[in-house]
Length: 321
Length: 301
Image: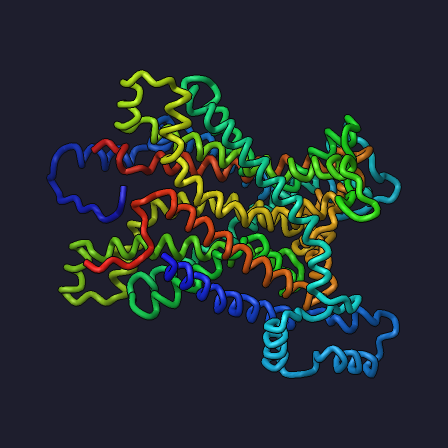
């Protein structure tokens, strides 16, 4: 098992390198010159060339990439082309905001989906089942950003219950927990609810499948209550496909964060990346992509490990026949 | 209903009746009654397709002509969805937006299917090192959230509608590649393929004539679901500004523009949003309905 984990971790390195190499090349082939954008009005061929030299943009591509990789190994992700802030610090400053959003949204969608999915499975003859499927289908087709905007329309503008956008820090001199919670509510809902529908449907169908197996029939024969059956016996086995789905959904935290952070002006990594993309701030984009790729791979690995831990039949080691 | 079946003349009367039935005029109606869901969603999509094709005729105004005197008007008799901040009729823009979205569906899925199937066929049939390399690449691409990848590709190529279509298409390649590869791996073991090899059929012939027709059914299902996803992805890209650029009437970018006017002109966002939802939802339900309809287990033989 440890061999498998080590192999997976090792595999992550070339994948990350591969992805970033491609991104590196593609970014620099882009129309749009960061030097020109930064200099704006004062751009003359001489000043542009000077800035290119200063930023190291006039070296051959391979050399630039090589320099970047070496610096990474020393923990230096470069400096933003816009304000010369170290990329690592820029990302680090905004990471707590994104993490707060992502973790809360993840927890919310997990709790909601478990509740709805389990209830839909237990009361399988009620309308809850088809309703869950319907919602899953609707939220698949409803664009995430449109849903977020509808939320803003209803709760922030029409009902004036919550703020339209913005952020209040959790610590430091301006810390305000109440304001922070008010500002984070809509973004979390916007991020979590679309995923909840799909996950709830998965939980429901997985539970239903389990509930028809023989050992559950035995439990019912023993006279156990439906509730105990579901929670103590069925859940454990029904959880398996759900774990895999959860591993995948950690990726959604990143994609969703981009959009939600932009709509709600949430000062997170997503918004940083979106702005960096339009201003061709390569170091920031590369840094974010690298971190995103690594964290997603780690998350998938954790999900696979959890899956193997949950199901004793699954083993990733090689068996000698 | 695969083309791999062979009927010899004078065979059981059911075969003859089936053939005659397929050729009758009412075949379409009969199919519709047998698979009502497919018929419904196919019709909705057909309607949307008509809207898209006849956009120039249906749209009451030009989607791009600006009228500085008529900005931000509420929905009224002459402008059913009001006007936007440049005085353009919102309804016309939505109609042309539907056209754009359907274009996106076609092109993006075509790219994904084309490249995906090709890679899948190669990987599945060649096996060995080629298969290993292609599979590793696909795994690597899948390790990355598709939206981020699409954003990166589209903004790298230069934000435009066409580049967004390419980006979305590329993100769809792994799904089709894996699917095709799986089917090829299974089909490879079948007897008629072995027979084909035995009589000296070329690799290409086997792939094209025998394997490809048999993956058509599930491919349509996956393609339909992918079309829905492609439309949503492109809308997201345009919303973020890395897709269609003004003045192109794109449903996603229309919602982005409407963000600034939510206070008083909320309908500017609702129209395009509902349109995107309808298109994506129809594709998704069509895919589900097709999957149930084409399920071989439910066929009467």
